[in-house]
Picture (cartoon, rainbow, N blue to C red):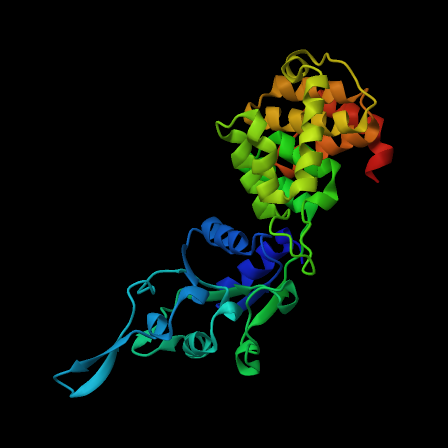
Length: 331
């Protein structure tokens, strides 16, 4: 399933306190999806990395109770005591069987030792697939049967929507629009340490925003997404020098037009990012008017990206004219 569908589906199951398990390749944003759901609902979020835990970390430590003359378990402080939220058990199938056994009782009975999970909390778990060559342990069938399972796919349009909303460098967004296949290049059969994933493109965004000499960019970006992708990306961003003045387009609807595909992808990403940073009705009118003479597929791409970012344009006279011009592409 793609991210936008998972947000709706898992969000509904969280509301019903149904345990869910999210499977997917490394670096595609599984934990980010669950955290985003919790944030959008205004509830708490606790992220437990079970692969880093010992069994007693989850179950607690036994102590002697003088009054009852019995051994009780002191639950860990990181488990929630009240309120509403999501308890996220990340890397569940990467945890040793002994840790999975401790989590088993928490997931099945919503309690472990002396601790009981508050009524307002839902459990969501995640893990890499066995085929991804990560460190994984077989999940016991009774535990697997306690979850509703989903597999997350990498979807370029979902990623682009997230990237615009998150303020990712428009050069990265434009490049992924141009080279869809470079959003995710993970190959379980390869021993390459660096490969492109949604997470590693976040690192590229940070590298571009860092105060780093240009002479070091290739090595730095190669360390995030791999050498071949880094070379291709840096070659692509050289087209920035061939772009028309984006600010002038937004101010006056005037600007040059190009027939080069890479330039058009870079221009489309740059125009949308610039408008989202500083929105106004006048700039929207100018942007739409400029697209009248743009290659149709890029005019449509720009408008669709604006709409996905919740920009309404039905009130715009330019948009009414735009719809008449490009209606044949919208069916």
